[in-house]
Image (tube, rainbow over all chains, first blue to last red):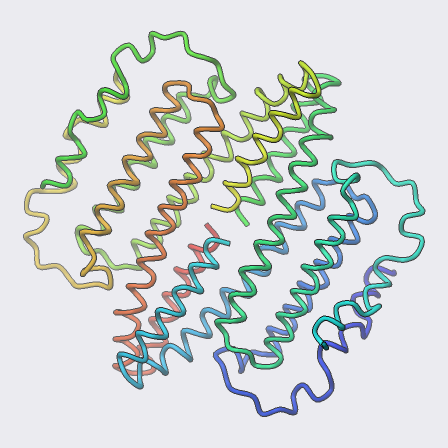
Length: 119
Length: 119
Length: 119
Length: 119
Protein backbone atom coordinates (compact mmCIF):
# COMPACT_ATOMS: atom_id res chain seq x y z
CA UNK A 1 0.00 0.00 0.00
CA UNK A 2 1.38 3.33 -1.04
CA UNK A 3 0.85 4.98 2.30
CA UNK A 4 2.85 2.50 4.33
CA UNK A 5 5.42 1.99 1.64
CA UNK A 6 6.21 5.65 1.37
CA UNK A 7 7.13 5.88 5.03
CA UNK A 8 9.44 2.89 4.78
CA UNK A 9 11.22 4.21 1.70
CA UNK A 10 14.85 5.24 1.92
CA UNK A 11 13.56 8.79 1.69
CA UNK A 12 15.09 9.67 5.01
CA UNK A 13 18.55 8.73 3.86
CA UNK A 14 19.70 12.29 3.08
CA UNK A 15 18.93 13.35 6.63
CA UNK A 16 21.09 10.57 8.09
CA UNK A 17 24.16 10.42 5.88
CA UNK A 18 26.38 7.31 5.99
CA UNK A 19 29.06 9.22 7.84
CA UNK A 20 26.68 10.55 10.46
CA UNK A 21 27.94 8.12 13.07
CA UNK A 22 31.56 8.56 12.05
CA UNK A 23 32.15 11.82 13.89
CA UNK A 24 33.20 11.54 17.49
CA UNK A 25 30.71 14.13 18.68
CA UNK A 26 30.10 15.25 22.22
CA UNK A 27 28.24 12.96 24.60
CA UNK A 28 24.90 14.17 25.90
CA UNK A 29 22.23 12.86 28.20
CA UNK A 30 20.42 11.14 25.37
CA UNK A 31 23.48 9.62 23.71
CA UNK A 32 23.07 6.10 25.16
CA UNK A 33 19.48 5.99 23.89
CA UNK A 34 20.17 7.86 20.65
CA UNK A 35 18.97 5.09 18.33
CA UNK A 36 15.74 4.79 20.29
CA UNK A 37 15.13 8.55 20.01
CA UNK A 38 15.91 8.49 16.29
CA UNK A 39 13.44 5.65 15.85
CA UNK A 40 10.71 7.56 17.71
CA UNK A 41 11.39 10.78 15.81
CA UNK A 42 11.28 8.97 12.45
CA UNK A 43 7.93 7.60 13.53
CA UNK A 44 6.65 11.08 14.44
CA UNK A 45 7.93 12.37 11.11
CA UNK A 46 6.00 9.63 9.31
CA UNK A 47 2.90 10.49 11.34
CA UNK A 48 3.12 14.16 10.38
CA UNK A 49 3.51 13.10 6.75
CA UNK A 50 0.43 10.93 7.29
CA UNK A 51 -1.53 13.94 8.55
CA UNK A 52 -0.57 15.92 5.43
CA UNK A 53 -1.75 12.99 3.36
CA UNK A 54 -5.08 12.95 5.25
CA UNK A 55 -5.57 16.64 4.49
CA UNK A 56 -4.56 16.13 0.88
CA UNK A 57 -7.06 13.30 0.53
CA UNK A 58 -9.84 15.32 2.19
CA UNK A 59 -10.20 13.04 5.18
CA UNK A 60 -12.84 14.21 7.66
CA UNK A 61 -11.60 17.10 9.88
CA UNK A 62 -12.28 15.28 13.14
CA UNK A 63 -10.12 12.34 12.13
CA UNK A 64 -7.30 14.71 11.20
CA UNK A 65 -7.65 16.40 14.61
CA UNK A 66 -7.50 13.07 16.42
CA UNK A 67 -4.23 12.30 14.68
CA UNK A 68 -2.81 15.77 15.45
CA UNK A 69 -3.54 15.26 19.15
CA UNK A 70 -1.84 11.84 19.04
CA UNK A 71 1.28 13.15 17.29
CA UNK A 72 1.51 16.14 19.64
CA UNK A 73 1.52 13.69 22.55
CA UNK A 74 4.17 11.53 20.89
CA UNK A 75 6.39 14.55 20.38
CA UNK A 76 5.93 15.71 23.96
CA UNK A 77 6.79 12.21 25.14
CA UNK A 78 10.11 12.44 23.28
CA UNK A 79 10.68 15.79 25.00
CA UNK A 80 9.91 14.29 28.42
CA UNK A 81 12.38 11.49 27.75
CA UNK A 82 15.07 13.96 26.75
CA UNK A 83 14.45 15.98 29.93
CA UNK A 84 14.92 12.88 32.06
CA UNK A 85 18.12 11.91 30.25
CA UNK A 86 19.42 15.47 30.50
CA UNK A 87 18.73 15.61 34.24
CA UNK A 88 20.25 12.16 34.75
CA UNK A 89 23.49 12.99 33.01
CA UNK A 90 24.23 16.65 32.39
CA UNK A 91 22.59 18.03 35.54
CA UNK A 92 23.72 15.30 37.93
CA UNK A 93 27.29 15.44 36.52
CA UNK A 94 27.39 19.23 36.86
CA UNK A 95 26.06 19.05 40.43
CA UNK A 96 28.79 16.58 41.29
CA UNK A 97 31.43 18.95 39.91
CA UNK A 98 30.26 21.90 42.00
CA UNK A 99 27.07 23.39 43.45
CA UNK A 100 27.52 26.38 41.12
CA UNK A 101 27.83 24.22 38.01
CA UNK A 102 24.74 22.31 39.15
CA UNK A 103 22.79 25.53 39.71
CA UNK A 104 23.68 26.80 36.24
CA UNK A 105 22.50 23.58 34.59
CA UNK A 106 19.30 23.56 36.66
CA UNK A 107 18.46 27.09 35.53
CA UNK A 108 18.89 26.09 31.92
CA UNK A 109 16.93 22.84 32.29
CA UNK A 110 14.09 24.62 34.11
CA UNK A 111 13.69 27.10 31.26
CA UNK A 112 13.50 24.21 28.80
CA UNK A 113 10.94 22.41 30.98
CA UNK A 114 8.87 25.60 31.18
CA UNK A 115 8.80 25.85 27.38
CA UNK A 116 7.66 22.24 27.20
CA UNK A 117 4.89 22.70 29.80
CA UNK A 118 3.65 25.81 28.00
CA UNK A 119 3.69 24.19 24.57
CA UNK B 1 22.55 24.10 2.63
CA UNK B 2 22.05 20.48 3.45
CA UNK B 3 19.33 21.09 6.00
CA UNK B 4 17.09 23.08 3.72
CA UNK B 5 17.90 21.01 0.70
CA UNK B 6 16.94 17.78 2.36
CA UNK B 7 13.48 19.08 3.18
CA UNK B 8 12.95 20.21 -0.38
CA UNK B 9 14.03 16.87 -1.81
CA UNK B 10 11.54 14.91 -3.82
CA UNK B 11 11.39 12.52 -0.90
CA UNK B 12 7.85 13.56 -0.15
CA UNK B 13 6.70 12.91 -3.67
CA UNK B 14 5.16 9.51 -2.92
CA UNK B 15 2.95 11.08 -0.28
CA UNK B 16 1.57 13.67 -2.72
CA UNK B 17 1.19 11.85 -6.03
CA UNK B 18 0.56 13.87 -9.20
CA UNK B 19 -3.03 12.75 -9.25
CA UNK B 20 -3.67 13.68 -5.65
CA UNK B 21 -5.73 16.67 -6.64
CA UNK B 22 -7.52 14.85 -9.40
CA UNK B 23 -10.02 13.05 -7.21
CA UNK B 24 -13.22 14.90 -6.50
CA UNK B 25 -13.16 14.18 -2.80
CA UNK B 26 -15.62 15.38 -0.21
CA UNK B 27 -15.49 19.01 0.89
CA UNK B 28 -14.59 19.69 4.51
CA UNK B 29 -14.10 22.72 6.67
CA UNK B 30 -10.46 22.98 5.75
CA UNK B 31 -10.86 22.42 2.02
CA UNK B 32 -10.63 26.11 1.01
CA UNK B 33 -7.35 26.45 2.90
CA UNK B 34 -6.04 23.01 2.02
CA UNK B 35 -2.87 24.20 0.30
CA UNK B 36 -2.04 26.39 3.25
CA UNK B 37 -2.48 23.46 5.67
CA UNK B 38 -0.35 21.22 3.44
CA UNK B 39 2.36 23.87 3.40
CA UNK B 40 2.31 24.14 7.20
CA UNK B 41 2.33 20.37 7.68
CA UNK B 42 5.25 19.95 5.27
CA UNK B 43 7.07 22.52 7.33
CA UNK B 44 6.32 20.65 10.57
CA UNK B 45 7.48 17.44 8.92
CA UNK B 46 10.75 19.13 7.96
CA UNK B 47 11.13 20.41 11.51
CA UNK B 48 10.66 16.94 12.97
CA UNK B 49 13.26 15.64 10.52
CA UNK B 50 15.48 18.50 11.70
CA UNK B 51 15.06 17.36 15.32
CA UNK B 52 16.08 13.82 14.37
CA UNK B 53 19.14 15.30 12.66
CA UNK B 54 19.99 17.28 15.80
CA UNK B 55 19.83 14.09 17.87
CA UNK B 56 21.86 12.20 15.28
CA UNK B 57 24.53 14.91 15.32
CA UNK B 58 24.64 15.01 19.12
CA UNK B 59 23.36 18.56 19.43
CA UNK B 60 23.03 19.75 23.03
CA UNK B 61 19.87 18.36 24.74
CA UNK B 62 18.51 21.78 25.65
CA UNK B 63 18.60 22.94 22.03
CA UNK B 64 16.77 19.80 20.96
CA UNK B 65 14.14 20.46 23.65
CA UNK B 66 13.66 24.05 22.51
CA UNK B 67 12.97 22.80 19.01
CA UNK B 68 10.55 20.13 20.28
CA UNK B 69 8.54 22.77 22.14
CA UNK B 70 8.42 24.93 18.99
CA UNK B 71 7.27 22.08 16.76
CA UNK B 72 4.65 20.98 19.29
CA UNK B 73 3.24 24.52 19.22
CA UNK B 74 3.27 24.59 15.42
CA UNK B 75 1.35 21.31 15.31
CA UNK B 76 -1.18 22.53 17.86
CA UNK B 77 -1.63 25.70 15.82
CA UNK B 78 -2.55 23.58 12.81
CA UNK B 79 -5.05 21.76 15.02
CA UNK B 80 -6.56 25.04 16.25
CA UNK B 81 -6.93 26.21 12.65
CA UNK B 82 -8.67 22.97 11.70
CA UNK B 83 -11.05 23.32 14.65
CA UNK B 84 -12.02 26.83 13.56
CA UNK B 85 -12.57 25.72 9.96
CA UNK B 86 -14.57 22.73 11.14
CA UNK B 87 -16.81 24.86 13.35
CA UNK B 88 -17.21 27.46 10.58
CA UNK B 89 -18.33 24.98 8.00
CA UNK B 90 -19.39 21.54 9.22
CA UNK B 91 -20.91 22.65 12.55
CA UNK B 92 -22.60 25.82 11.29
CA UNK B 93 -23.99 23.96 8.25
CA UNK B 94 -25.33 21.15 10.41
CA UNK B 95 -26.91 23.63 12.83
CA UNK B 96 -28.65 25.31 9.92
CA UNK B 97 -30.03 21.96 8.78
CA UNK B 98 -31.57 21.11 12.16
CA UNK B 99 -30.86 21.60 15.87
CA UNK B 100 -30.34 17.84 16.19
CA UNK B 101 -27.77 17.75 13.39
CA UNK B 102 -26.03 20.71 15.01
CA UNK B 103 -26.01 19.02 18.42
CA UNK B 104 -24.50 15.86 16.96
CA UNK B 105 -21.68 17.79 15.27
CA UNK B 106 -21.03 19.82 18.43
CA UNK B 107 -20.65 16.63 20.48
CA UNK B 108 -18.12 15.30 18.02
CA UNK B 109 -16.22 18.59 17.76
CA UNK B 110 -16.11 18.96 21.55
CA UNK B 111 -14.54 15.55 21.95
CA UNK B 112 -11.87 16.50 19.39
CA UNK B 113 -11.23 19.81 21.16
CA UNK B 114 -10.89 17.98 24.48
CA UNK B 115 -8.24 15.69 22.98
CA UNK B 116 -6.37 18.74 21.69
CA UNK B 117 -6.50 20.56 25.04
CA UNK B 118 -5.27 17.45 26.86
CA UNK B 119 -2.44 16.81 24.40
CA UNK C 1 -2.95 32.67 60.79
CA UNK C 2 -2.96 35.89 58.84
CA UNK C 3 -2.85 34.33 55.41
CA UNK C 4 -5.85 32.10 55.94
CA UNK C 5 -7.77 34.72 57.84
CA UNK C 6 -7.50 37.19 55.02
CA UNK C 7 -9.05 34.78 52.58
CA UNK C 8 -11.97 34.05 54.89
CA UNK C 9 -12.85 37.73 55.20
CA UNK C 10 -16.19 38.82 53.87
CA UNK C 11 -14.25 40.48 51.06
CA UNK C 12 -16.16 38.48 48.52
CA UNK C 13 -19.51 39.70 49.66
CA UNK C 14 -19.71 42.77 47.40
CA UNK C 15 -19.10 40.67 44.35
CA UNK C 16 -21.95 38.33 45.15
CA UNK C 17 -24.71 40.52 46.58
CA UNK C 18 -27.67 38.95 48.40
CA UNK C 19 -29.83 39.60 45.39
CA UNK C 20 -27.42 37.89 43.05
CA UNK C 21 -30.08 35.39 42.02
CA UNK C 22 -32.80 38.00 41.90
CA UNK C 23 -31.74 39.42 38.57
CA UNK C 24 -33.21 37.78 35.54
CA UNK C 25 -29.80 37.53 33.96
CA UNK C 26 -29.00 36.42 30.48
CA UNK C 27 -29.07 32.74 29.63
CA UNK C 28 -25.84 31.23 28.43
CA UNK C 29 -24.69 27.87 27.21
CA UNK C 30 -23.83 26.73 30.69
CA UNK C 31 -26.95 27.97 32.41
CA UNK C 32 -28.77 24.61 32.54
CA UNK C 33 -25.74 23.02 34.21
CA UNK C 34 -24.84 26.04 36.35
CA UNK C 35 -25.12 24.25 39.69
CA UNK C 36 -22.90 21.45 38.44
CA UNK C 37 -20.25 23.97 37.29
CA UNK C 38 -20.45 25.80 40.60
CA UNK C 39 -19.97 22.51 42.43
CA UNK C 40 -16.90 21.65 40.34
CA UNK C 41 -15.41 25.12 40.71
CA UNK C 42 -15.91 25.04 44.49
CA UNK C 43 -14.06 21.74 44.46
CA UNK C 44 -11.19 23.21 42.44
CA UNK C 45 -11.09 26.17 44.81
CA UNK C 46 -10.81 23.78 47.75
CA UNK C 47 -8.07 21.87 45.98
CA UNK C 48 -6.05 25.05 45.37
CA UNK C 49 -6.50 25.89 49.06
CA UNK C 50 -5.27 22.37 49.80
CA UNK C 51 -2.13 22.99 47.72
CA UNK C 52 -1.42 26.19 49.66
CA UNK C 53 -1.85 24.16 52.85
CA UNK C 54 0.62 21.55 51.59
CA UNK C 55 3.18 24.27 50.89
CA UNK C 56 2.51 25.87 54.26
CA UNK C 57 3.04 22.54 56.00
CA UNK C 58 6.24 21.82 54.04
CA UNK C 59 4.88 18.79 52.25
CA UNK C 60 7.37 17.19 49.86
CA UNK C 61 7.70 19.14 46.54
CA UNK C 62 6.83 16.15 44.37
CA UNK C 63 3.53 15.63 46.18
CA UNK C 64 2.67 19.30 45.74
CA UNK C 65 3.47 19.00 42.03
CA UNK C 66 1.25 15.94 41.65
CA UNK C 67 -1.61 17.90 43.13
CA UNK C 68 -0.94 20.92 40.89
CA UNK C 69 -1.10 18.69 37.79
CA UNK C 70 -4.41 17.21 39.02
CA UNK C 71 -5.99 20.59 39.71
CA UNK C 72 -4.81 21.98 36.37
CA UNK C 73 -6.55 19.05 34.68
CA UNK C 74 -9.73 19.62 36.70
CA UNK C 75 -9.78 23.28 35.70
CA UNK C 76 -9.20 22.45 32.04
CA UNK C 77 -12.04 19.92 32.23
CA UNK C 78 -14.37 22.69 33.41
CA UNK C 79 -13.18 24.76 30.45
CA UNK C 80 -13.82 21.91 28.02
CA UNK C 81 -17.34 21.51 29.43
CA UNK C 82 -18.02 25.22 29.02
CA UNK C 83 -16.78 25.10 25.42
CA UNK C 84 -19.17 22.26 24.62
CA UNK C 85 -22.09 24.06 26.25
CA UNK C 86 -21.19 27.28 24.46
CA UNK C 87 -21.02 25.55 21.08
CA UNK C 88 -24.27 23.68 21.79
CA UNK C 89 -26.23 26.78 22.63
CA UNK C 90 -24.70 30.12 21.66
CA UNK C 91 -22.99 28.97 18.47
CA UNK C 92 -25.78 26.68 17.21
CA UNK C 93 -28.42 29.34 17.98
CA UNK C 94 -26.43 32.03 16.17
CA UNK C 95 -25.89 29.76 13.17
CA UNK C 96 -29.63 29.16 12.99
CA UNK C 97 -30.26 32.91 12.98
CA UNK C 98 -27.91 33.58 10.08
CA UNK C 99 -24.65 32.29 8.60
CA UNK C 100 -23.03 35.64 9.48
CA UNK C 101 -24.11 35.45 13.12
CA UNK C 102 -22.81 31.87 13.22
CA UNK C 103 -19.47 32.90 11.69
CA UNK C 104 -19.05 35.69 14.24
CA UNK C 105 -19.67 33.32 17.17
CA UNK C 106 -17.35 30.71 15.69
CA UNK C 107 -14.51 33.24 15.44
CA UNK C 108 -14.98 34.17 19.07
CA UNK C 109 -15.25 30.56 20.25
CA UNK C 110 -12.16 29.55 18.27
CA UNK C 111 -10.09 32.25 19.92
CA UNK C 112 -11.23 30.99 23.34
CA UNK C 113 -10.42 27.39 22.39
CA UNK C 114 -6.97 28.48 21.20
CA UNK C 115 -6.29 30.11 24.58
CA UNK C 116 -7.36 26.90 26.30
CA UNK C 117 -5.17 24.68 24.11
CA UNK C 118 -2.17 26.95 24.67
CA UNK C 119 -2.68 27.13 28.45
CA UNK D 1 -26.31 33.61 49.11
CA UNK D 2 -25.53 30.17 50.38
CA UNK D 3 -22.82 29.27 47.91
CA UNK D 4 -20.73 32.38 48.40
CA UNK D 5 -21.39 32.52 52.10
CA UNK D 6 -20.08 29.06 52.62
CA UNK D 7 -16.71 29.99 51.15
CA UNK D 8 -16.33 32.92 53.50
CA UNK D 9 -17.05 30.77 56.55
CA UNK D 10 -14.24 29.96 58.91
CA UNK D 11 -14.39 26.46 57.49
CA UNK D 12 -10.75 26.60 56.55
CA UNK D 13 -9.62 27.17 60.09
CA UNK D 14 -9.20 23.48 61.00
CA UNK D 15 -7.01 22.87 58.00
CA UNK D 16 -4.60 25.65 58.92
CA UNK D 17 -4.35 25.49 62.69
CA UNK D 18 -2.94 28.44 64.61
CA UNK D 19 0.20 26.48 65.28
CA UNK D 20 0.78 25.69 61.63
CA UNK D 21 4.02 27.63 61.64
CA UNK D 22 5.05 26.28 64.99
CA UNK D 23 6.26 22.92 63.75
CA UNK D 24 9.85 22.73 62.66
CA UNK D 25 8.97 20.90 59.48
CA UNK D 26 11.34 19.49 56.90
CA UNK D 27 13.08 21.85 54.49
CA UNK D 28 12.27 21.44 50.83
CA UNK D 29 13.29 23.08 47.60
CA UNK D 30 10.58 25.68 47.87
CA UNK D 31 11.07 26.52 51.54
CA UNK D 32 13.08 29.73 50.97
CA UNK D 33 10.36 31.07 48.71
CA UNK D 34 7.46 29.64 50.70
CA UNK D 35 5.75 32.96 51.38
CA UNK D 36 5.92 33.88 47.73
CA UNK D 37 4.33 30.53 46.76
CA UNK D 38 1.63 30.97 49.37
CA UNK D 39 0.89 34.44 48.03
CA UNK D 40 0.60 33.13 44.45
CA UNK D 41 -1.58 30.20 45.50
CA UNK D 42 -3.91 32.47 47.50
CA UNK D 43 -4.21 34.57 44.37
CA UNK D 44 -5.05 31.52 42.25
CA UNK D 45 -7.60 30.47 44.88
CA UNK D 46 -9.21 33.91 44.67
CA UNK D 47 -9.24 33.69 40.88
CA UNK D 48 -11.00 30.32 40.97
CA UNK D 49 -13.54 31.81 43.38
CA UNK D 50 -13.91 34.66 40.89
CA UNK D 51 -14.65 32.18 38.10
CA UNK D 52 -17.37 30.55 40.23
CA UNK D 53 -18.80 34.01 40.82
CA UNK D 54 -18.80 34.71 37.07
CA UNK D 55 -20.72 31.49 36.47
CA UNK D 56 -23.10 32.30 39.30
CA UNK D 57 -23.77 35.73 37.83
CA UNK D 58 -24.29 34.36 34.32
CA UNK D 59 -21.29 36.09 32.82
CA UNK D 60 -20.79 35.37 29.12
CA UNK D 61 -19.20 31.92 28.52
CA UNK D 62 -16.28 33.29 26.51
CA UNK D 63 -15.25 35.60 29.35
CA UNK D 64 -15.37 32.69 31.78
CA UNK D 65 -13.20 30.64 29.42
CA UNK D 66 -10.64 33.44 29.10
CA UNK D 67 -10.34 33.50 32.86
CA UNK D 68 -10.03 29.71 33.08
CA UNK D 69 -7.14 29.78 30.59
CA UNK D 70 -5.44 32.52 32.62
CA UNK D 71 -5.80 30.66 35.93
CA UNK D 72 -4.61 27.40 34.39
CA UNK D 73 -1.47 29.22 33.25
CA UNK D 74 -0.97 30.77 36.68
CA UNK D 75 -1.22 27.35 38.31
CA UNK D 76 1.21 25.80 35.82
CA UNK D 77 3.62 28.68 36.50
CA UNK D 78 3.57 27.79 40.19
CA UNK D 79 4.30 24.19 39.20
CA UNK D 80 7.22 25.26 36.99
CA UNK D 81 8.64 27.31 39.84
CA UNK D 82 8.36 24.35 42.21
CA UNK D 83 10.13 22.12 39.68
CA UNK D 84 13.03 24.55 39.43
CA UNK D 85 13.31 24.85 43.22
CA UNK D 86 13.11 21.07 43.57
CA UNK D 87 15.87 20.52 41.01
CA UNK D 88 18.01 23.26 42.57
CA UNK D 89 17.85 21.83 46.04
CA UNK D 90 16.64 18.25 46.39
CA UNK D 91 18.08 16.92 43.14
CA UNK D 92 21.40 18.77 43.26
CA UNK D 93 21.87 17.83 46.93
CA UNK D 94 21.12 14.18 46.23
CA UNK D 95 23.49 14.15 43.25
CA UNK D 96 26.24 15.54 45.47
CA UNK D 97 25.64 12.76 47.99
CA UNK D 98 25.98 9.97 45.45
CA UNK D 99 25.22 9.27 41.78
CA UNK D 100 22.64 6.69 42.91
CA UNK D 101 20.82 9.16 45.17
CA UNK D 102 20.86 11.67 42.29
CA UNK D 103 19.47 9.11 39.86
CA UNK D 104 16.66 8.23 42.23
CA UNK D 105 15.64 11.87 42.65
CA UNK D 106 15.86 12.48 38.90
CA UNK D 107 13.50 9.57 38.22
CA UNK D 108 10.98 10.98 40.66
CA UNK D 109 11.31 14.55 39.37
CA UNK D 110 10.96 13.40 35.76
CA UNK D 111 7.70 11.64 36.53
CA UNK D 112 6.38 14.82 38.15
CA UNK D 113 7.49 16.91 35.15
CA UNK D 114 5.77 14.45 32.80
CA UNK D 115 2.51 14.86 34.74
CA UNK D 116 2.85 18.64 34.47
CA UNK D 117 3.55 18.57 30.72
CA UNK D 118 0.58 16.29 30.13
CA UNK D 119 -1.79 18.39 32.24
